[in-house]
Amino acid sequence: MKAACHIAIFLFLSLSVYAQQFYVRGEVTDEAGNILQNVVILQHKTGYVFRSGSAGTFGILSNQQIDTFSFSMQGYRTERLLVNADNYLRVKMKLLPASATHAHRDKLSSVTKDLEKEVQKTWFTGDETYASLLENNFIAAKLFPSTGLALNVDRASYSNIRRFITLNSLVPPDAVRIEEMLNYFNLSYHEPQGGDLFHIKTTLTACPWNTDNQLYYINLSSKKLNLDTLPPSNLVFLIDVSGSMDMPNRLPLLKSAFRLLVNNLRDKDSVTIVVYGGVTGVMLNCTSGGEKEKILKVIDELEPGGNTPGESGIRIAYREARNHFIKEGNNRVILATDGDFNVGLKTEEELDELITKQKDLGVYLTCLGVGMGNYKDSKIQLLAERGNGNFAYLDNYKEAEKVLLKEFTQTLYAVADNVYMEMDFNPEYVKEYRLVGFDNKVGALRDSLAAIEGGEIGSGYSMLALVEIVPTEINKGAIKDNFTTGKLAEIKLQYQYPNSPKQHLFKYTSHFAYIPFTELDKSYHFSAAVAMFGSFLRNSPFVKEVGWNEIITMAQNSCGANDLLQKEFITLVQQAKTLYSKVKKKKGSGSQW
Image (tube, rainbow, N blue to C red; front, side, top):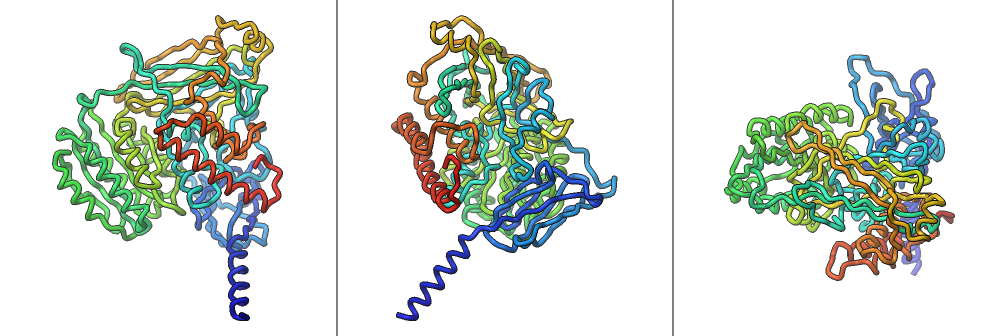
């Protein structure tokens, strides 16, 4: 009995230590003592990326007292430090020689015309912040009526969130990108009419999380390409086979994913396989998609080992894509990795420079992320953005099947490049507005030269952009009088056809037509539930009047009877409610959770 008590006490103490969380605090300056904002802070154990705040300070939760962090910033030497959470950390960054620096500009996800970045900097909630995404705030439509956003088919954020919650782990706020969560479900598709490449539909309704405001839906759908007439594909599989990929949810999962993709290929398509790791080079020379057994044999024989020479692999893959380039075809590198580039180019700036040089050659880039712990979301996202492409996160076989089989054409066949949407709101009806999602990186807002670039849109794609609106008195009166002839907004869509430099413009006038939330199609209710879920995970201050139960109820009432993805979403929210409720009880938090 005494021995059993000792064992019980030991287990209790062990679990207590394991569950304990530590708070690593500190500041980053240069050698002269000047504060450094937006320094990239890598937590080696988890692979999470944080950033120093507007006063150069940071605060990071860790489940161990002694932890290892790296501090990096363009123009400065990277500092790797062993940190004790009991001590306030003062990090001094040393300048690199001028010849070692690179010209690099951050990219914006959304931009409001004439809105000074100095104004946006006031949106920061405090000196201590480690989130690299800053949630969009309300903007006065009378002063700044025009806002724009870059469109793409990325949806990696949702599956990454699912992985965290399934493992009973809190989701880093920086991993939550609401526009990608909405992208994941491909809701409310409408076939474009005639020769149009796009279809736009807008809806104005009540805001379910703030009864004083309205919710404005912008639904964009792209043309479906005819499967029988799809252009030939020149695909280069660039597969990470380094030692870090030696886990069931990494290389074995990718091998299964590529098998699915190969089964979709035609005789006129071609595949080249390049690997990097213990072995780096071409494992399969350009081969017809009809020779499936030959391609699958090479995939099945891949084994993990060695370091991660990502730079070499990327250069070889693009070389092969150029060597077998198909004019007016689908030329694409498909990079599959956990993002842990530890040999060659490592920083986001260096990877940016390498990929940017390649995209002008007409080769697209699709990124498939896998793994836990050292999965580098920020690096893979940046590669896809700069490489004129898209990215997805594969957390299980079903996700691989969704991305590479069910959504084959959306993932691999672009109908438009550099797609950029601009909305011009009518101040007569819109007092203030804020984008839900499309949040910018902190560094991009602080960079006076940051720019916005459009994204790639695939075949048969549907997206929902949400805007929360503070209505004017005229707006409220129009609803009361059932007035529907006014103009709410003007929408302009700029884009290019694949491999063509010519700019095209698609215009749409959004008339003032208010529809009560209860009368909307269920897909709109479901998308609102997804947006609220993302806002909860980000602990958004803008979501009012609702809690976990309201999100679950809305999702349940709008879920498609045979839609397994939507049913899975409900389960995910229920799991998150349990997980975050426990955290609230432990911390005694006064937040919405």
